[in-house]
Amino acid sequence: MGKIITVVNQKDESGKTTTAVNLAASLGLIEKRTLLLDCDPQGDATDCMKVSVGPQGPSLFGALTGKNALSELVRDTELRFLDVIPAGVDLFAADRVFAGTPGKETLIRNLLSDVWEDIDYIVIDTPSSLGVLTTAAVAASDFIVIPVYCEPDIMLNLGLLLQTVAGIKKEFNPGMKIAAMVFTRCDSFDEVYRYVPPDWLEGVGKNVLLSTVAKYDGKNVSGSRPAAFVLEDVMSMPAENYLDLALELVRT
Image (cartoon, rainbow, N blue to C red; front, top):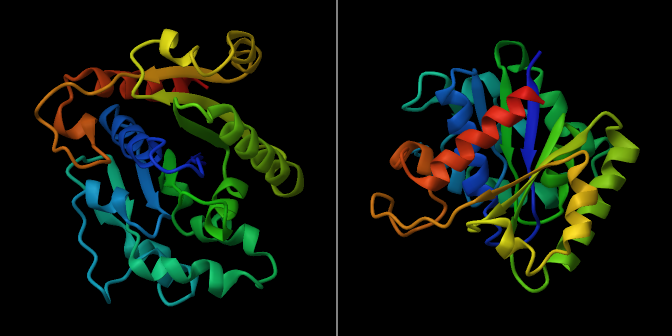
């Protein structure tokens, strides 16, 4: 049975989609059968995988509403071991459509049973919010990966996110655990320590993998973010950092 890894942070520009895309691509590169599930209505992960979804094209929302079977939506990527289920702009309606639905927290887990058995890892990219889709994705997860961009209000944002994840865990998914905290655009923990007390990190690190992803200083990746470093510049330091993260998670 495959493992579900959800990448989550309600803060914009945290490196959430970049982490989801590069983690999924890294797992594919090491020949783990991987499915990237794009739950973010902005569809950046879908774009990174060079998958096109037209205004009326089938996307995740069709599966959530029963219009499509999830298996119908699986799209190939340039990596043999990586597929993607795309997001479309119709996902923006998810909070409105499902807000009053009983059992909405199990939407994603129930949906994934359609493709579950043939996959080693499912990586979920979530919206930059704590709405229905994010809650359902966390409730479906075996592991949570939290990307963090170091900035002055980092502890406030982390505190809110960790409280939310803990609440979902307690009520809907007792077996889920936070597997990794990824500090993005940081060359070393010296930068992280400017914003996060070392003793706080040491306490978290007893059970959670802590890693940094270096700033990208190459020219092979377009300036627009998110960036699929593992696909576009595999020799870069961020690509190496994400590959190391994937290998560590496989050992988890």
